[in-house]
Image 1 (cartoon, rainbow, N blue to C red):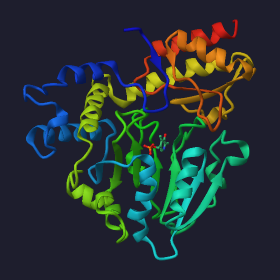
Image 2 (image 1 turned 45 degrees about the vertical axis):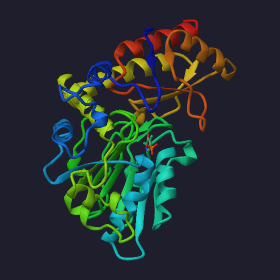
Image 3 (image 1 turned 90 degrees about the vertical axis):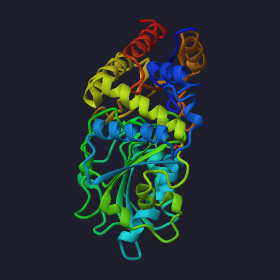
Image 4 (image 1 turned 120 degrees about the vertical axis):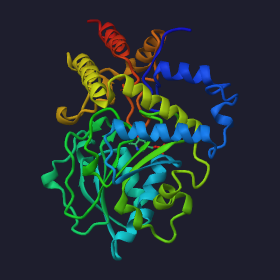
Length: 362
Ligand SMILES: *Cc1c(COP(=O)(O)O)cnc(C)c1O
């Protein structure tokens, strides 16, 4: 097999060791005679896989005891509707939800939430082309809001928070961490809800993680579907209905792999180094440009443009010939994008840097 480095934004690269283990266990999981895909989600084998995955994730993120971890379906976009349906019962009508609009994903969240409540965009970086996170001092937050929603890493725009937002007292902070969960250390206790689609930095598509403080399980609207009611899901250990069993199994292998690599602190140190290498190559002269404010450049998703965009196709073809895959930028913004999640080895970033230099004729 040819060596490639996959820079896809998602579904994205997984650790080779995890895929190898999954391959070796594909037909017969640990002497059970069954593939994980063939097991009852209520049988002892799968329950042990589930509990280990949950415990390992709790350890990796130091999730406090008063938080529940839910393994759900419906993706990040599903949560955009599931969150209001679970939290709007906290406040009297007319409910207001605060948002900070920092790019494509928080924009989608605003649009979906507007179907359920009044939304207040407390701050937006749209006028600047989504190249920064507005300073918190400028946010027009609502006292008594149902919650404050932020996207702490904008996957398309390449903008990452370097601070933890502070909502007014009693207003829970909800964070979409789909594309940088487990890439850096976080203090879970500062958040009411953290959610993440798995297909960026965790595992296969089809699994959505939700980490929710226990007191926030009590406020679902009557219209909330039972399968998406967090309290119901928590009470059934994510097995109110059939969970995405194989995706949970792979996520569990990723969690065990991260622990063996030294956990989130070790990943963060590697991610800082990987991002430094890549930004340094992009910044060296004006052949390439990343337009994001230096204070909030993402460590995970690095969009960039060629000064001469007529070279885009040649750039991508040359990259592909060297095994550097899926570097084309999102269609909404054009250009290029390198996603360098946990599973991207530093050798992959170095190979991309070498190619950037070669293509620029340096
Ligand atoms: C990918 C992504 C989503 C959407 O996830 P789906 O699983 O496709 O619904 C939401 N938010 C962020 C930040 C993402 O990167």
